[in-house]
Amino acid sequence: MMKDSSSFCQSPSLFGLITFFLSFPIHISESVTFKVIGPSHPIMAFMGEDAMLPCHLSPRMSAENMQVRWFRFDFTSLVHLYHNGIDQNAHQMPEYQGRTEFLRDDIANGSVTLRIRDIRPSDKGQYNCLFESRTYNQEALLELEVAGLGSAPLISLEGYQDGGIHVVCRSVGWYPEPEVIWRDPSGRHLPSLSEMKSQAANGLFDTKYSIILQENANPNLSCWIRNPRLNQAKESVIYISDSFFQKGNPWKVSFHVILAILLVAISFILYWLIQKCK
Image (tube, rainbow, N blue to C red; front, side):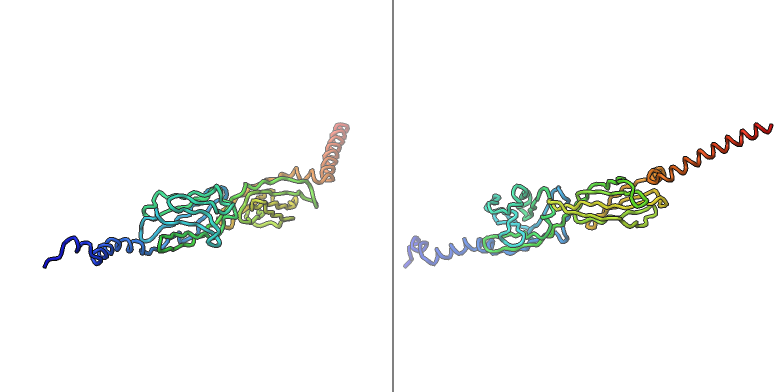
């Protein structure tokens, strides 16, 4: 006796089989694992400019329906959060508010970038880039370095001191702390009279170095400032003429004036004697 076809189609075993096959691909897609890949070297960013923090999935896959989170010291130190297709930064760290942008032009291939604007010294350090699907999460660690080239050295003459000329070199806006050297034309280092480096509220370093230049020294003098992180330097050169040293020693000026007067007087006397003997 043949069974009714409608009762067969409505049997629990067939319904369960159909449900299994329909749900099987879904279970596979949700259980896919991946790696998060970030830059293999530290990212260098300049003071006041933008920093780009990229990371991507391997193998390539869409991250549009994933949560993507950048954080600093722990999971709650939120730098930026992308979730449910939008940015959700209600709990973002105050120092990053209004400064971050999630770039997702290639998110369909699992590649995204975080832009941080107006880089400052406090941004230096490690960042975690976390991707999270419904069933799996993975993260990568990124390192951000910050550097700033300050102003060109400003050299000024501050007066006379200890038998020489007091010369001062000033520069502002360096990060990290720069190296400052006085040099003569041959590149020989000259000892400073005083050295001062101060760090402003924004984290940048200002410098003020002074030296006493004696009259018998080379009149060409340079102030050389180098950023050790970038290995880049700025240099200014000054030439000090002999007249500045003479002004700093009034007795020398008086001596030369008296000597000149004596030479004129002697010349006049000799001329008078010669004329008288004719």
